[in-house]
Length: 135
Image 1 (cartoon, rainbow, N blue to C red):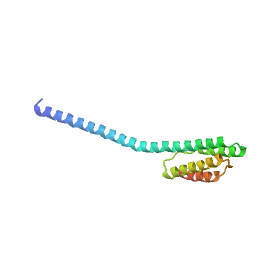
Image 2: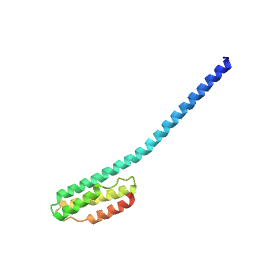
Image 3: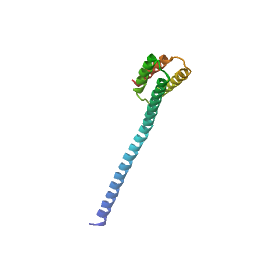
Image 4: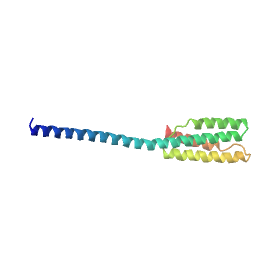
């Protein structure tokens, strides 16, 4: 083999190696972008699950504060409804979940003061509105 043929083989090998390296780098960067985009969404889903759990747990506190059978029944139904909510990345749903928690805390204050259960209609309305965003 002459020097020209050897040089051509070496240049071809280098070009092939560079092409393979560039392809691998491109694929890795593409995967990294996808992971980054999904991790933000995943984080918002986890936050939504935490809000749902907090609201459900707050209803559990309300159940401990009352001993009236019809109030217990109403709160258990509300707790079941909250327990099976769909987590969401929507900002509107986040606001509704926060409104629900605020209303539950208001009810907790009333029950702690010995007042009868009231205010669950507003929570049921908020839950219905929330379902519009997650359906």
